[in-house]
Length: 204
Image 1 (spheres, one colour):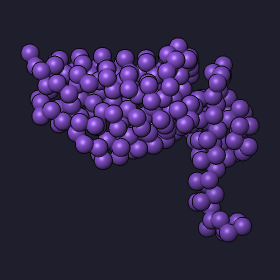
Image 2 (image 1 turned 30 degrees about the vertical axis):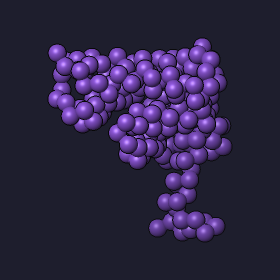
Image 3 (image 1 turned 90 degrees about the vertical axis):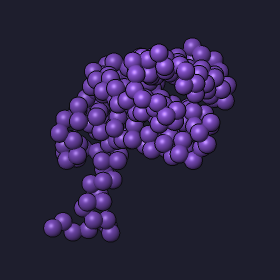
Image 4 (image 1 turned 60 degrees about the vertical axis):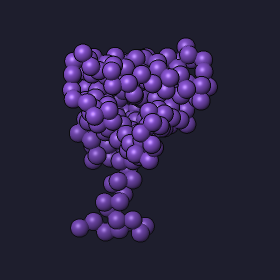
């Protein structure tokens, strides 16, 4: 059994090193420039840790990218769900959108990691596609529960359209192609999503 080092036990030191790697990953993958080739050496240099410690936490670069993406996604999903849960039914769209956009505004790396069209990391793009399907299913379920609807092809088509458009709009906003302040951008997205409160949209 490993003894504590400077009052910190082995499992906590491992968790701290892993977090340093995850922080480095957010900086590398969500930074201003898309790294042409993400290497273990670059990851270690950014984190200030050695290769030995990298393989202590991750089997390879793909596992590292997935851990970074999953950590950021889980944190954003948790705070957004909490914001929605405390809002009235009429204000849930605004609460969710506001949390999403303010989180990105506070740390643009999160937005670039999840939404930027300028990133080319193959593992990251695959993870985005995988999670897009999950978000579409969750959005469809949310609409069904909020409006007391059953599933339909119109509902499926609408959720694909809305989430695809939302992702593209956020990417353009991050790139400066949409020049709106945070509150203005939130208002725009909420107005676009307002029709989702109309049950008639999903019937027929």
